[in-house]
Length: 127
Image 1 (spheres, rainbow, N blue to C red):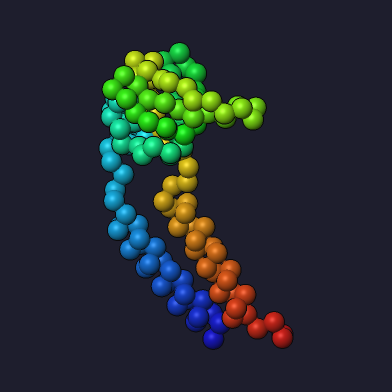
Image 2: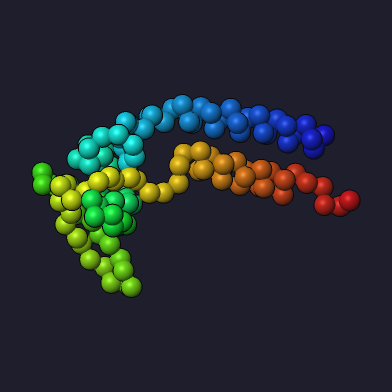
């Protein structure tokens, strides 16, 4: 009986996750990786999101996007407990990508949490 419940829950969870994945808007081309100019990449990222910036010098900057201007953007960085806002010119940027968990990673964690809760609630501990 428990195996049937687990099978049903797994099927329902997978169906739900696939619906959530298809309901999400597909990532726009160049949003944080791959082709596109740095201007196009930054314009597709919302302020407040974590980003990673690779400069033409090879240096990598990590922080949160504050705002975008016609000449560049501002990046909020925290180093050694000190927070600062740094202006970055588009001409100095090689690429910009969004940081954080992918949609599939979030779905996997949600599935693991659901399965754990289900097993705790429906497992017969008297055996």
